[in-house]
Length: 240
Ligand code: APR
Image (cartoon, rainbow, N blue to C red; front, side, top):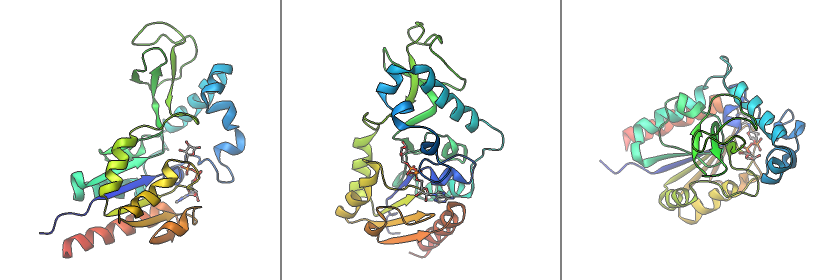
């Protein structure tokens, strides 16, 4: 049987919108009610850590609400991973854990995770599910005030970039789901994938800023588009 195609999927906040989590740049988005420079930069954390703690504590608490669960798009990607194994890689800009809760295992969180805290002293990341503030002792150095959200802020280097570039250079398909394509380096992945010869597909509620760079672009809600796309992709695998 021909070798399985290599697929890299990039997700953004749009894939979690139907699970009840706010996106950033839609009308009710997080950046409509908060300024990035107040809650999502190292300078913001240095100037007013309590405000930054409260921003991420609120998002973590929302994620832990019982009604916030993976939707059909998350589940479909987990199913595609089951078919492709190590020929599949999911890169997410999202800091929620809905992909993992849907069963995805090969997930790279390039912007970090709401359910982790990082020691500012050692850089070590710790699973973290409860609210924290400046007085919370750090698990690794026991000193209070060392913990920060394990989130990649604006001006910081996203994570796993070498692994992501390596995967893009070998991808047969690059599928972008639920992202506005406004934040680099993720916004540049489609161009990289094209340069290495991949077929590029965008599944988004509306055409993103990078929409014209994709071989194919479909608009609609992720919970409908993604399962349909995955079913067709798996069907294609079975006949090839
Ligand atoms: N189905 C599919 N797409 C959707 C849905 C939906 N139900 N709802 C919204 N979208 C689309 C919007 O049309 C938009 O293009 O999801 C995209 C969300 O864009 P953003 O809010 O900009 O989120 P994202 O692209 O993930 O932002 C990237 O910016 O602020 C930083 O670090 C933050 O990871 C984030 C990065």
